Length: 79
Image (cartoon, rainbow, N blue to C red; front, top):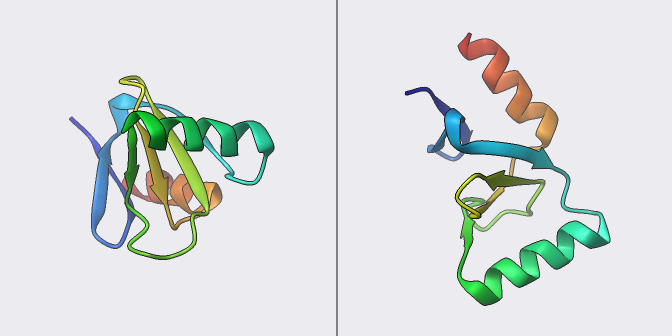
């Protein structure tokens, strides 16, 4: 199983990631708001601004303080 660092010592299984998107678009904001209401959001941003939203195959939504580009670099360096 491969893990990806999503910032501040937090990690997520690469096999569970469906998508990594920017949190700025209105549909993503609604997705996060609905996920918070349902208890499906995991905030791994350590109190920092959310710069990426990671959507998992388990319908969980993980918030990260790293941008999607920074997360891609993390994956590229791990290979």
